[in-house]
Length: 156
Image 1 (cartoon, rainbow, N blue to C red):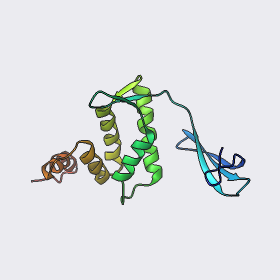
Image 2 (image 1 turned 135 degrees about the horizontal axis):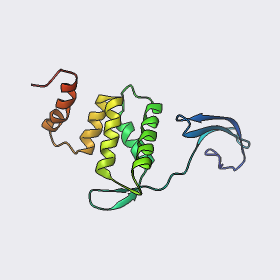
Image 3 (image 1 turned 60 degrees about the vertical axis):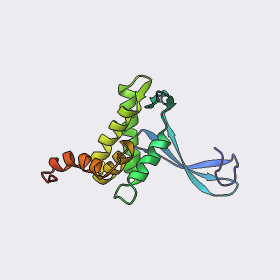
Image 4 (image 1 turned 180 degrees about the horizontal axis):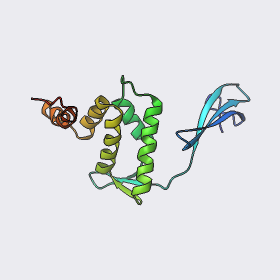
């Protein structure tokens, strides 16, 4: 493993433990040259699932892109990095178990929103506003109405 600080390929593992509910191994490493410490994660390599976008193009599922979108939606919300990581793992597991080699982007977005709605409703609405391309305040109200009906608060 090359050190992200000095680029040397001379390190040692100083701690290893399971993470993400056993879906990954977290390794704490120390560079033997510059003595900086850094963390790496080891995950099982999954089959490449392709996402079929609205325009018909196919792109590989990008875990980092999903994480960035979730981080934006959860910005300044009481949602930890571990919560976001767990949501991503949940989505990946669902896709791997239920989709062959391709998944429609619309279906993927709905899976993410379903998980996010359970985690944080404000983050859910933020994600939905970008994903569903809200045009005005009415789109927000239409999205909130069922959620508020669930909590018996309703919008008039």
